[in-house]
Length: 169
Image 1 (cartoon, rainbow, N blue to C red):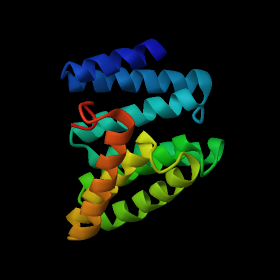
Image 2 (image 1 turned 180 degrees about the horizontal axis):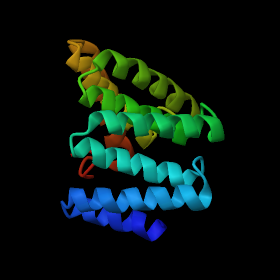
Image 3 (image 1 turned 90 degrees about the horizontal axis):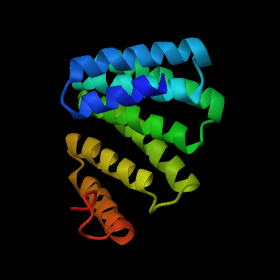
Image 4 (image 1 turned 90 degrees about the vertical axis):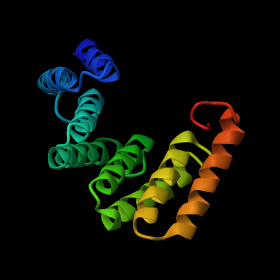
């Protein structure tokens, strides 16, 4: 099933979204059957499927899967585990993409507080979360705070990765 999961990622990168979704769905279902619904590999596969569904325009299905992944990670890893906080960030980013900026803000602030406490202010995932929160805030007209967060994320990426790294440029 891990092979199917990896193949789905390749198909996604090749722009074959529908085929990637089918392959990812098979991988997630197979992992759920063989490892269980709360196994980390199963949850990762469901999260990847959620991203494909979002890209295909099925935001409601993507949201339901992201909520399942978050719930599973909270139950198995705890609410402050970095993977749980990443799932919280993913759900918040999806809420922003769906135009639900108030919900996105609440989720992303929780994720940012948790990530800052557990992995630090300069960790790449914390910086990603700052950027996601900045986008949600900008969508709500909170431009000053959004700019502050974007600047922090950019400074952090430049310090950690250098000014020419693809994540910085």
